Amino acid sequence: MNRITSILLLSCLFTSASVSVMAAPNKGTAAQPAPAAQAPVPPTQAQLRAMSTARLLRLGQAALTAEMDTPAFVTGLDAAKIASSRGDREATRLIAKIMARNQVVLGADDRAKLERRFRFEALRGASSSVLAVAGMYDRGDGVPVDTKKAAEWYLWAARVGHERAMAHVAYGYGTGRGFERDEAAALKWIEGVNEGRQRSTLLDIGWALAQGTEGSADMSSALRFFERAAQLKPGVAYQVALDLERGTRGIQDRNAAGHLIKVAAERGDSAAATHLAKLLAGSNKVEDQQQAVRWYSLAAQDKTNVAAGQSLSRFLALRPAGELVSDIVAGLEKAAAAGNSEALVGLAHAYSEGIGVNASPERAASLLQQAADAGVPEAKYRLGLMYKSGIGVGADLNKAIELMNSAQESGFPLAAVALSSMTDASANPSAEKPIAETAATPK
Image (cartoon, rainbow, N blue to C red; front, side):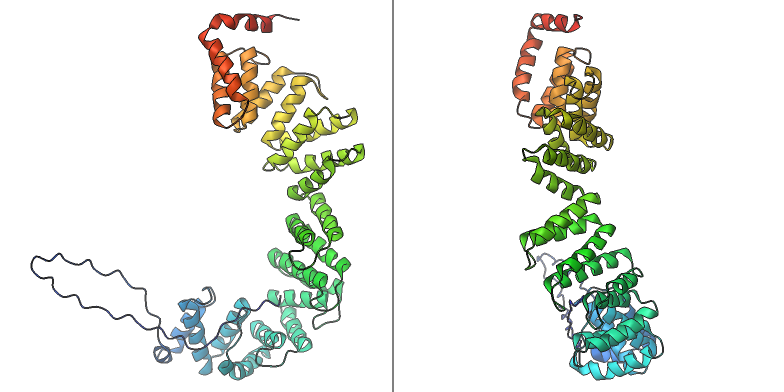
């Protein structure tokens, strides 16, 4: 909340490039190409002062949406300042909006004059001007830092509905900056702002409490604000957890990190769930393995998290203890239904081998076809073998070769050996006859 972007609000003079005079080409001399069109040259201070107030206001409006340090921003702010110096109240309010949006710090020449105008507009209900005065006291811009006085001005703007001011008030109550700390009041004020600002303010409060930048460090309170941010977007809690685990923000707390990883996972963040599952998967305890399966199952329901789908499939391939099998198969079913292509391969293995379900080569082939259509190399390989042997599908060596070729091109390591045997069989059809007959013979 206290990140300040500074800009020196002095006149920005831009020197126009001189235009070269093109001499007529001499006879026998190739004509020179026309010079490229030059960017418009911003007006000078003298030119701005010669403009009408209405035109200055139009230029000032452009500064609301322009990037800082661009000619449009500097020119627009200068234009608004000139219009304000003429006594135009709209221009003064416009400067306040520009300052609030960009967290601009005033240059020394502007502070005293503009502060008086801001106060005048603030007393007449202009919330952006109220916020501009609050920012001056908060940052010490031309006045001594006075967080209590800043808090009063922020509260004033917040009460008339200014969202940025509401966020400042929430931060003040949450951290004790200018207010007595009051967690309930902080959460009440944060409800009035949009979701993105809610999330960023909650994180700012959390980090200020964790690091003690506004007073004493208080990790337990910080965690409550981080958890509230996770209600809006679980992934932010996981990112905070990684920062706490690695100490990338100057504070390392693995216990707090572990707590937030679990919070994020429980709220559906697949990366956090995968993280937890990996920590538990290597344990020899059945209880830990059950938890690992649970987290992998949750993570794999994010169809983009193919790693979780692969991990569940590997669990099943290891032929775990009986009580885990049903949990793994249930997890694979949910992940496959969600569109996780790697889970389709694991589920196909379950139906092919009859692990936790009644064996069904046809169902296995159908699942592998879905995964192959999604581009999974292992699915192409396994389906190719089924077409070669005629298990679950009609025997079709050409189809088997086609699938195996595709698997090999995708880099699946076993495909080359299988393809070699298939192409040999294709060159000598009689060699395949016993295989086909065997596959067709009922048991």
